[in-house]
Amino acid sequence: MFSQSKICVLPLLLLLVAPCSSTTIVLILTPRFIVAGADRRTNDIDSIGKFANQGTTTKVILLGGRQIIACIGMNKWTPQDRSATYDFQVWIKQVSAKIAPNTPISVLADIVEREATRTFTKTVPIERMMRDGTLPHAKAIDKFLTQFIVAGFENGSPVLVEINFPLDWKNNLLLPAVRGTGISPNSGSYDFLYVDGQTDEIGPIQLHNTNSYCYKRMKVLAPGSLEKIHANKMTDRTEAVRTVRALITVEAEKAPQVVGSGSTIVVLPTRGVGDETNYDVPLTVRSQQERKQEKKLKK
Image 1 (spheres, rainbow, N blue to C red):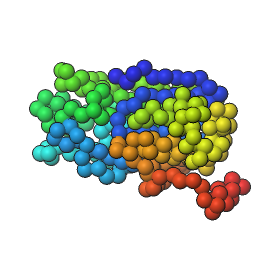
Image 2 (cartoon, rainbow, N blue to C red):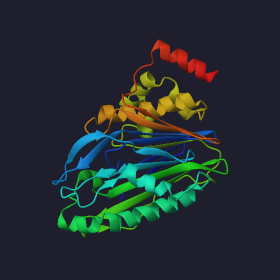
Image 3 (cartoon, rainbow, N blue to C red):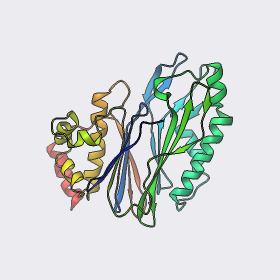
């Protein structure tokens, strides 16, 4: 399993989940909006358990305009014999047919868990593939096959559910799904920062350590964001988007071989339809033109 989740209580609650795979995901959840982001790099696993066929993919998706779902871990895989193929983007479209925009996040999480269990036991028989070597052992899936993050609003409060699918390589078993760190509708009117990174570079210690690479880079890429995170004043969506992109960029700079520099960002307001944007390039220092555009957006 993951190492024990570290939960640091700050004016803005910071939830850190230990590294899982070649994915970085960051969410800022507030009673006003949710901003979710993930890097865009995909790494297929080859016949000897190493990464191959590197490309880009979308790991965080907006469903029905009102729900967010992200995939960490194995998000795309095609065995050499092509006997079965798993692609998160294709799979989630099938799941979306079973939900409505007003489906509660708790219900959506149950649907995702049920459909994923069916997929990994029947459509893509993971245990058989572990036994016959079709699915080779790889560091990226040493503990978990995949992890789903489901987020949205229930009764005006941000909700997050983490669903993990652990693997037992000693006995070649796909263990029952386990719910991890989460945010319930009863968590209070706080803001939350949820981070799941490939390295520990964007964890709570680094975000406070003025000598850390993360702290120094955030000062450059998203000036003022750390102060607002610590002071629970992340009230502007444009700034939240930049903060999420900046944290993903920091991870990509520290682990470029497994974390992509581009990102997918989903912005979901408390009411109304959210939007999804792909950024194929890393975040850079604001240009004068960008600053002018952001000022206009804030008016």
